[in-house]
Each structure stands twice: as C-alpha cells, then as structure tokens.
Amino acid sequence: MATTLLPLSRSDAWWVRVFDFPRMQIYVVTLATFVLYAIFAVDPGLLSIIFLVALAGCLAYQSYMMYPYTRFAGKQVQATVRANDDSTIGLLFANVLQENRNANELIKIIRDADPDVILTVETDQWWKEKLSELEQTYPHTVMQPQDDTYGMILYSRLELIDAEIKFMIEENVPSIHGRVRLRSGLEVEIRCLHPPPPVPTFNDSSTERDVELLIVGKEIKKLDRPAVVFGDLNDVAWSRTNYLFQDISGLLDPRVGRGFYNTFHAKYPFMRFPLDHCFHSNHFRLVDFRRLAYYGSDHFPVYIKLSYEPDAEVEQEELEATVSQQKEAQEKIDEKLAET
Image 1 (cartoon, helix red, strand yellow):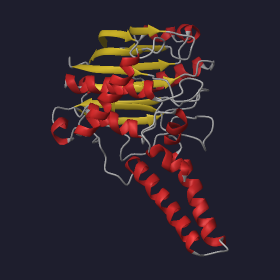
Image 2 (cartoon, one colour):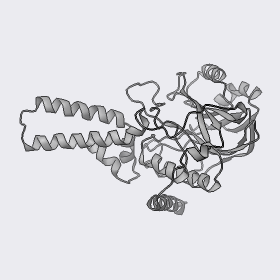
Image 3 (cartoon, one colour):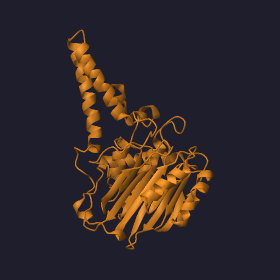
Image 4 (tube, rainbow, N blue to C red):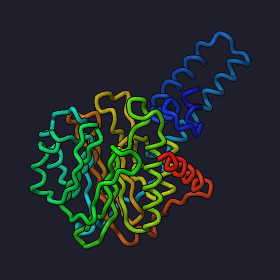
C-alpha cells in the first residue's frame, strides 16, 4: 500500500517519485495479494475487512491513473483519414544505450521506418561516427555527442530552422530547440529532450527533470503554433508531472486511448514502462505510431507520423491548466532557478 500512497505526495525525492513508474507491476502484486488474502485469510474479522478495503482502494487508484492509456479510454488524438505527404512529418527517436554497439541494426531499423527526422540520445563520439552514413540522406543535423549518457544528435531530411543546443537546467544536460519546415512550407516548433531520471546514480530528486519539462511546456504554450516535443523524458505517461506538463503546455498525447507503448526496459518484459514520448499540439492528427524492434539498447525506438490538418485544431480540444496547476508549475520553476 505504501507504494501506492507515496506517489500521492508532491515530494520530488527519488525514493518517492520512483513509485510513479511501476504502476502496472504494483497493480498486479496488489491484485494477487487481495485474491490470496481473500481466499486464505484465517480471520475474516474487522481488521481483515479493513485490509481488503484498503487493497481495493489501491487497485482502484492505480486503475484510475493508468486508465487513459488503455483502449477503453477515448482518444486524445484523432486518426487521420486524409493525410497529405506535404503536410506530414515522420519522427523516429531512440535512446541508443551508450555502451550498446549494435549501430548497424539501428541503422537498418531507421532505413525500414524511413522517418523525416531522427533523434538519438545517449550518443557519444563512437555513435556519432557509426551513424555518420545517415548524413547522406539526412543532411540537416544538430550534434552534441557526449560520453556521460547525455549526448544527443538530431538528423533531418527536412530543413531545420534556428536549431540549437541549450543547457536549460544542468550544464551537462543538452536539449535541442528549433523549427522544422514541412514540405508544404509550414514551420513546426520542435523540442528534443532527455532530462535526467530521478534515481540516485543521476539525481536524488525529480526536480531537474520536472523543471525542464515545465519550462518547455510554458514556452510552447506561449508560442501558440504547431509544435512537437519528443525524446526520452525519463518519466512515465501516468505520472503527476506528465499530466501537469500536458496541461501547462496544452499538448496532446497520442498514447491516450491507444495503449501503453512501453519502451523501457527492452530486455525485461516484466519491468517495462512508457518512458519515451511524443507530445504535440492539436494541429496534428495521427498517421502512424509504432514501437520498433529491439537492437541491443535498454529502450525500444519509437516511430510516429503526424499530419498537419487545419481543422484538427477545432475538433481536438487543447488541454488547459487550472490556476492551481499554473501556480504549482511556476513555484517549481522559481524554486529551482533561484538555486542557480
């Protein structure tokens, strides 16, 4: 029960926020405990009833948090029925796992998917050299290879405009900011992110990750134009921070109503979470969304294709933050920036 109750706290401590991740695993263990206790409990007295009611409450809460990412929920993003190639953008993003050496397999996956834009993270100099052949067909690039698992490279066959590396919160954690011009000439804001996870080996809290997401969210909302934010966000789809980011930014999640699309951990099927995300403004409908093949990383790559359609903005409701959410987000940002 503690694993369900702890994430209700607003604490950013890693040992609290880590329980945002395994909601399905917690649900399965709790359900098994409920069933076994109900069957084999020796004393069916008041304490047993209280215990079972508490377990039922935990199951209900975990179900509530995960429900939007099941096929029973309504879709946040409509599927397109009339995509025009000039107004579409295909994105492939992959955490390569820095020590992974299966570059050729990733290149094959990329060639098969044939995206317009590719983002790789955890990309060091070795990966930069091995992926250099992509530059022949993806001539527009932004490169920040690093050997600390925060390297990042963006490849695009579409023109990049004012694309640059920024170090928003921590001096070693880059992100890519800019615009991409679709074949139609439309310019789309893009933000490529890979904030640090809330684990002791990286950060002892989720503050840095949360603040980076919220700053980007507020910026995108203010720009009020077609936008896509994607990458390994080191956060799960059903966390409090994720919901806050969506409401602050107004961006939609194509996962809602379609499934978990778990991307990590690729090697352990029983411990998988949706960590790699693509959020976009309500100007787009969905053409394709796939988790791609395993190639040696601890993350599966993701492919998503979006279609810019003028009437989508009218038919797909933009998310809005409440006053209390706006206050919470600004307090988080102000507190962190005051430390720097």
